[in-house]
Length: 496
Image (tube, rainbow, N blue to C red):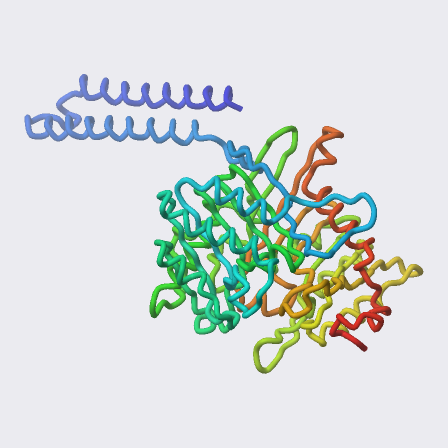
């Protein structure tokens, strides 16, 4: 290809040079009868030739610029980032798995590590903040990890680390003083009024450290996320390309947190992204090729270049070939927080289509606890009713029910808060439940990772393999209950 380009450019250069030479020769030997008789006319002719020569040189330069330009490729060049990844989990107290099972990096350890690594900036997004027991009028020793995290956060400004925090309006009603304490220590805090802007909430949960390290997951800045609620997320080290892309989402929240802000009809180009479903970030490290991008919701907060979260989910489902495992806190194909309520079948239809047309095997693990929404049950039963060995339709559904433990007085605890999906091709970790509101009015992000390796040992270390091992562990555990057996569990609000 380069030989052809060089040959063509050389030919073009010679052609233009000969053209210029011929024009100059004509000028030098031009006879008076051809028009250059007087000094004035001769001056005009000379100006014409000089102008032509100048235009010719510009043409040559433009030709070289076009011909020597790197050719477009169907695949972007690999990132120089390392983008090392680790699955992060929080397993509640008094939850013991039987057998030899593995767990992700503990959430408390991941957060403390990020706080220790921060040297320049920390940006945190969380729906709400309750890092101490007093925030919810509870006296419990299980809030100690949360208190330790709050102490570390307060110390960052004294280490010359710039800290920015974004949270939601409306939010959960608590007596939280976390943000007040952080402001007093020099942390910049903004509350984004999603209730006014979109009729939703800011439900995203992520960290960006020094513009290099990223955490995305289900955990809010809540001490219960560390000891009383089952959480899952992804920690990505040394991935500045992805971190800078996530900062654009953070910045959209930040500017909308200004007083009297209003959503633009079109987001400025500074919010555009070059990393999306069609052009994921390509990373090659340790014989593993990774394709990564971040999807987001709701649509009014996303420029056209950003893949919508619902679009990412449907795409992942439609591209799966053999299996899809889903773990979510709630599943209902409706818009249930607005009036009137509406049917929202986007994801539900994608599941049914993949199960019927492509014979993809589904396992769906939905959480059940005291606060489960009752309308989930008929929709889940409808999906489960399609399961048919005879018709080669494979949709299995279970509920994940955590035991109450010794501290039953702690509200909004003892639940599997995970939000992820894993297929034979992709790992997807999100901050959104699978209800229609989370994709139409509520802010959330979804991390999409596809890894591949031809090396047998490395292939077993891909994020898809690791995440499926987590799902297998939970699906086969004593906490996973068949749909027909939930009546035996009083801690589940979906009693038939």
